[in-house]
Image (cartoon, rainbow, N blue to C red; front, side):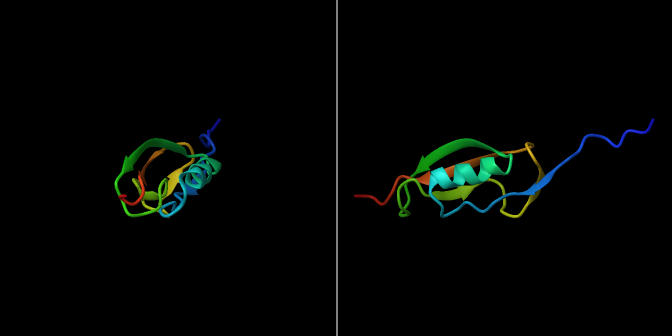
Amino acid sequence: IISKGADVEIVKVPDVVGKPLYLAQATIEDLGLEVGNIEEVENDAEKDTVIYQNYAPGSEVEKGSIVIDLQISLGPAS
């Protein structure tokens, strides 16, 4: 018997930079990927907008194989 191995599904990492956090999380999770650490940083972007992701958009990865860390904006300084 020859095994063909487990069925591996390849997905493309979405581009979530510039999107609201809730939408970014939904987009990532809908592809079977996981959201990791979410770091808040000072930035001029609107509050809770993703300003960085640790995997390049368009990268092809195995579904469920990576955790995408995000940085979100605290909003413009008052």
